[in-house]
Image (cartoon, rainbow, N blue to C red; front, side, top):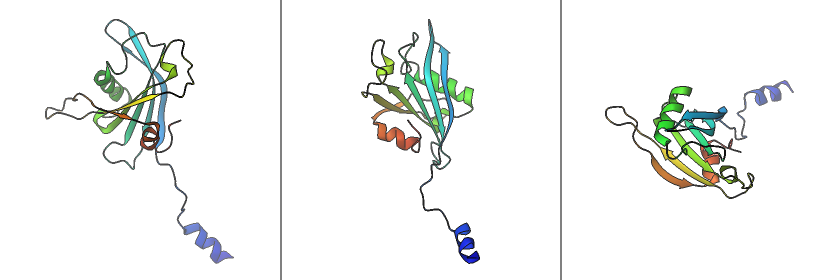
Length: 149
């Protein structure tokens, strides 16, 4: 019996484990050109991802009266990076629209759009413009290691 317990104590688990962690889940505001803007921000960290260990999901909100998240993408990446201490070039950025993005729409509507953006740094260390790609919900779930709702 003691030998079986010792074997179980050192045997590696075969169950898959989630590595990513939700670090931030908040309403994020920024000053646009004429109005204050807002988005729902979720920041995930996955230490197993070497190139881009962070995933930032920004939900476009119907209540946002300032510029859209897409319009201010590079500015937002810089601002969020400074606020939370991450390099925007080391993150996968996901811009998310759904029923919650439009006045009068059903916020729980299953129709949604995800656009992934990645940034890099120039030789002078400035953040470049984003590279865009439309992705699906399954991609976002994979980026967040199954933590995305």
